[in-house]
Length: 54
Image 1 (cartoon, one colour):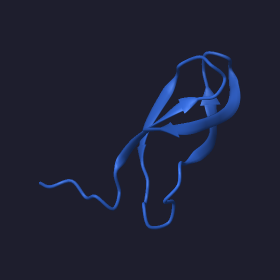
Image 2 (spheres, rainbow, N blue to C red):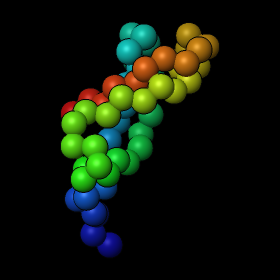
Image 3 (tube, helix red, strand yellow):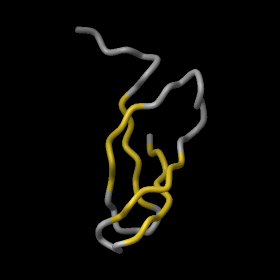
């Protein structure tokens, strides 16, 4: 099964400096720039911004 280049698998890393990451997919047509999501970081035990890394 071929991977779809329209929805690539990306890693988003915590901006709190803990090094915690999530793995998700994104739609390149809707979000061509780097993705930023607000998710839970269990190391600091609060919600922080996670930014896409390349």
